[in-house]
Length: 126
Image (cartoon, rainbow, N blue to C red):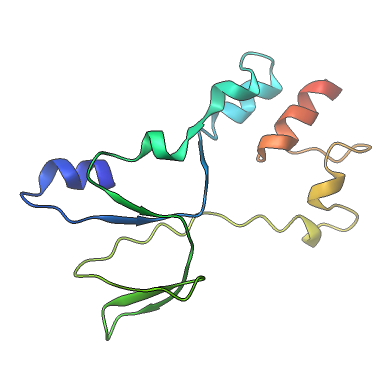
């Protein structure tokens, strides 16, 4: 989205708030499991994926205040905005499945292709 906005707007001032060091091509996890891709084929450094001119704050958004037009990060930084695009992502709660935690993926018969480490462990089992 940041790349498109940088291209579409005349004088963009875009800030990206994301805590991740890496950007994953998650559909590639299935290709790790099938042996087509190696783990290093499905990720890049986050900084290499951010368009030139976009400011990156390596943090998470903890709260949105639409009245004051600002977000608060987990580091308690208050960041004002004119327009806001939220992409909250997905949170996987492994512990919601009885007997499974993120740490036990790949042990016994508990596997997942929806996780970077889980895909690698699944490939080893297959």
